[in-house]
Length: 253
Image 1 (tube, rainbow, N blue to C red):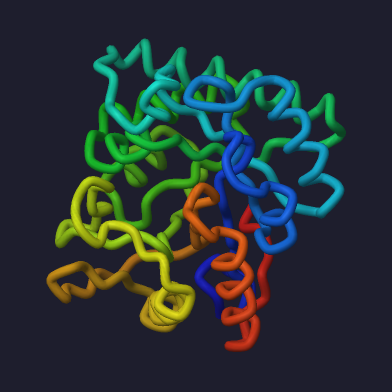
Image 2 (image 1 turned 90 degrees about the vertical axis):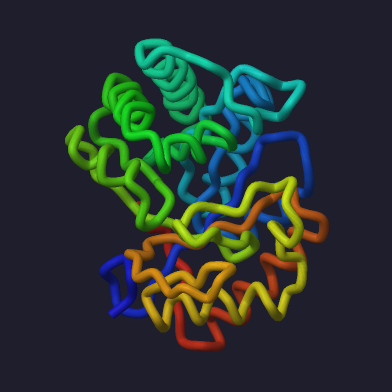
């Protein structure tokens, strides 16, 4: 039985609509696409194109809201009140839902972007605020969160269905959070290493941190960053490796 409840099925997701990388090619390998909502990157035209292209490829789509900070690509936390976070997420998610419908597709989940995502993993007040923002846009949406995080539990407490993701191309700190990008070896760029890591996670139902700690987690989706150099080749290698190991690539939502 696979982590997301269907026999030998796993979701593979990537960030799209950010104006970086080859979105069209990535859509040939992923089963879910996190579409930038215009604040950290993207905009109405890019979102509409991404939704239409994903629909044509049979790829599920999610809103990918982040801080309104294009200069830093949403990767630096911006001090905000809880109500500010709610509005930030509700605004972007609502816009994404409308544009997806306009493109003939439908948003099924939300994944916070960058610094907002990382903060929500450990700050339950921020996680709850994100959850309320999602719920305001559409209470039926799934929240895609860092596997094993306190934030995932807080969002579930707010009444949202929560899906858990792991990262094939990121290293983990001992507490189960991601190694910050500015630290050495935070990102993994080797296709074989990425594939081996993903398969090990699925086999063990766990992540392994930089100090060798094994942390059991739920796994519904595997993320591969679309802005990573060589992302298309990495996504192709990962998908091929997962299928060769007996996994079917299918959207979790």
